[in-house]
Each structure stands twice: as structure tokens, then as C-alpha cells.
Length: 195
Image (cartoon, rainbow, N blue to C red; front, side, top):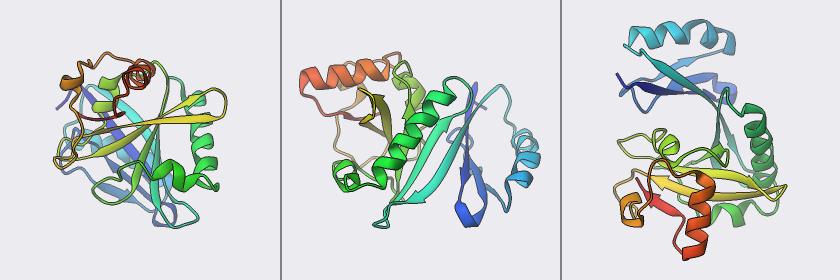
């Protein structure tokens, strides 16, 4: 099992709660209520061999008023209050007249929804890459900038995206997301990369 296991607990709305992880192939579980999920998920992780550090992320599965599906993800713990502020900014944006302008240049995941990750400026590219499913995934990293603005960049493990690789750009896993956005903007490079 991986040294660090990212676990995504998703509020599926009327369908309850689900659990998955990019480090645990085949892990998929669901519960009708949050109480059941909180009571059972740690034992489930032990049962499938997860040991070491577990990084918990919460996800909300939602739709824009136009019916576009999206998932907003944030990490529990470090910086959670700041991340939740960004989640609220993203939710406002996706329920405003600017939603289609924000989503238009972005790639959805293989299953059709946009996976939006609430990031902090000092989160690293490696931290984001570790959240990707190695069997194919697309994430939208979001940073709050200049008050109420949201900046976005994408990272993917999808085989069919035509984006430069992290290596081709000379970027490192230790690069912070704020450094990544500055580098991409200064160089006029795309802010979508293949991990």
C-alpha cells in the first residue's frame, strides 16, 4: 500500500455518501447516511490493507443551474478554513452567469463531470498529482487570487489529452501551485499539464 493514501468521501446528495481512493484500486463503497459512513469507513480502509498516513478529502457532487455536473474537493486538516472559503467562491461562480465562461476552456473527467480541487498557494504539484487516479483522471486545481477571483489550472493522467507533460515543461513535484501559475502565465504556456 502507498505511504500516503488519499481518501475521497463524497456527499452524493440524495444518494448518500461514497468513498474511493486513487491509491487503492477497486476501492468503492457507499452509505445511505453520513453517520453510517463515519462509523464504518476507517474499518473498511483497514480491511483493504490501508496503513500509514491517510489524507482525507471531502467532495460535494453538484450541478450548475444549466445541469453541468461537477465535484468540489477540499482536503481536511491543514488550511481547511481557507479551502472552505474557496469552495464557497467556486460555488458562487458556478451558480452565476459566469459559470460557462469559467468551465468552457476546461476538460471534464472521463465520466463527464468537472473535478474542482480547492488549493492553497503553497500546495505542491506533487500533492495534486497524488490525487489523480493513475488509470486516467483530470483535475482542475483552483486557487483564490486577489480577493474573490478564482484561478484554475488542470492536471491529467488521461492518455488522450494533448497537453505538455510536467517533465517537458521542466516543472517539479515540489513546485507550488502559485509558482506553477506564475510560470505558466509568464511563459505564455498552457496551464494544463499531463502528469
